[in-house]
Image 1: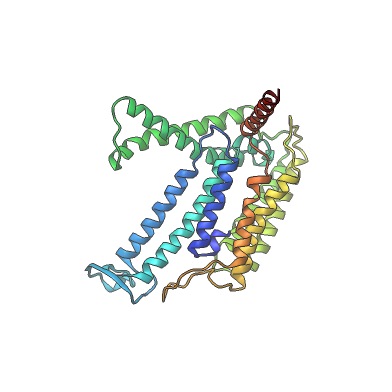
Image 2: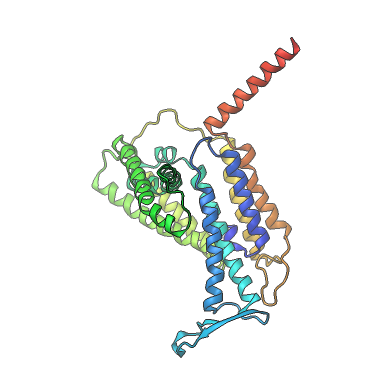
Length: 356
């Protein structure tokens, strides 16, 4: 939400830096991380956005012409779209800022893929939504498996003497990597479902219909509300009530489904102060940027015609810096925690030996 509400490149760079630091501090040791792939995808988005602006135009009109491309005349029905012609500084900056906003959103999605545990998440998906939970596992595991399989296939090709780079090598890797990543994700979802994760029991037709209707209404409300909060062109007062109503309907559907779906959990994960801190830091980061955008704080949306140097407004910066809190106060992943304990014990042992 914070990234979608601003076009300030300094704020967007701060978003990427914050999520990158959190991923580096809380990523499990030895786990495949798709965060770098999402960053490269963001750079590709910025490049493509600028190239399309230069070729097709139709963006922000400008007076500072950087260079002129050969122009192909188009019919009047093209509706202001051109092919070639003058490329202005104002149009390039507007396209770059818009692409940077999408790249920052992609970095946040990459951080969620790098830090989320689909297996732990599926344990807590209500049985009413077990189909959605299975699809969610496939979605969350696909990007990490994609990165892992890409490295594995590339290493195998290097052993066979194929160490090339470029578009041709990428084309050879695409099919086996995509197929293997999807197959492994589906195998994981099938194995979790075969062990009873999210399966419903003792459900009547009436409770099933009620839960399904409330779920559909709730999901529609949540999607519309989230879109209203993320879209900078719509009022947040329109999106927030829809989000609250959709969340209430979704919670009611879970309550209806839970009446006839008793479930037990082995070693349930705690929800304590660190979890509340992580939730509050993310909510406050988005809320402060949203408040700044609604109050018209300078440089939330950077002016490009005429082009000006962007500055850092203090309120959004404060909100984004709150996103660093999980890097210090969230629970450590298991392997990283074991490594820290081992290092601490080694340090104590060395200290005792030095003293003796």
